[in-house]
Amino acid sequence: MALPDSWLTPPPGPSTQAIQLATERQQVLTKPPGSLGRLEQLAITLAGLTGSEKPTIDPVRMVIFAGDHGVCSEGISAFPQEVTAQMIANFASGGAAISVMAQALNTSLEVVNLGTVGEVPELPGVRAELIAPSTANLAETPAMDAGQIEAALTSGDNAAQRAHQAGCHLFIGGDMGIGNTTSAAAIASALLGLPPQNLTGPGTGLTSEGLRRKTRVVEKALARHGEDQTPLAVLASLGGFEIAALSGAIMGSAARGIPVLIDGFIVSVAALIAVRQQPAIRDWLLFAHRSAEPGHQAVLNAMQAEPLLDLGMRLGEGSGAAVAVPLLRAACTLHNQMASFTDAGVSDQSGDQI
Image (tube, rainbow, N blue to C red; front, side):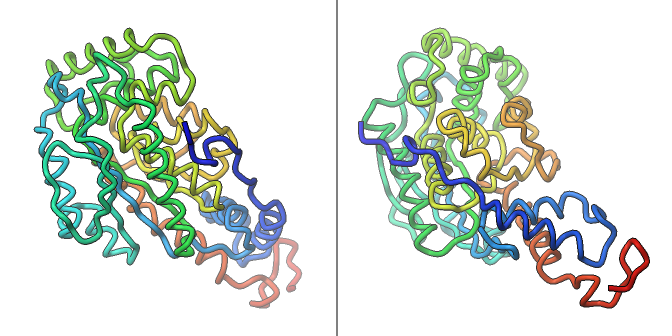
């Protein structure tokens, strides 16, 4: 199997010199130390990741990966599978939440269609990188074969390469795929060794009976999969095309020195796969928000992640990450443009005017 280089090779580390310079700069800006809270550390972290004392996250690249899931035949979603293809068209026409946010934030938005049951015509801004109409039913058989997992990971890595070629300083991945919370819950349960009932949530809005059925499906999939916690084995057995592509994009971005802003439950599970494969990936990840999906907190805990926001969101698409972009911009702007005590002729903590 020809996997992307980023799957096999650890990414570079953040720049210690840029971190030191940014830390020193924070100490002489005209404010009490620590008074900007997490924005200060965010600016220092971004300095290390971008290799610049004065970091920027712009331009930002948003990429949504879409794909259908064979497990939908188990009745685990409140929405029909055709919605995946319909939402791809909605992304392209500008009607989806992430489309609105991309326009408001003046960021690029790319959609990668990896395979849908419903037909998707040629649309502006949509790349057709079709693998199959859907994955196999993970409750009965491995979701992807070797060729499919290779294609999905490579698609994600190629998206990271396009972001790198465009000079992007921040990558945001989003997901679309009816049934993908079932896949994500199964992956998280397998990797974390936690019971499915702790990680399986309502997704598109299941009733209590629907949630019980969904949990049973995840239990069945885990029993079929067995005890193997190898990231590639778990991903191929229980994953989706879009989850695999997200893992490839996260790893590919880190390998190319691009920080990644992680969205909610689905993208965090893709990040967990990447971190389990290459632990040094964790340094390149920023976490946007805490999803209302019940399994998200356990996944965050596994990566020692504290998100920037907690707004009760659970839409997916990268929408929670998009909402956090202004915070990252604010952190950079404050860090880069505030005057130092010397510049402003303001006394420091000792009372000396410096």
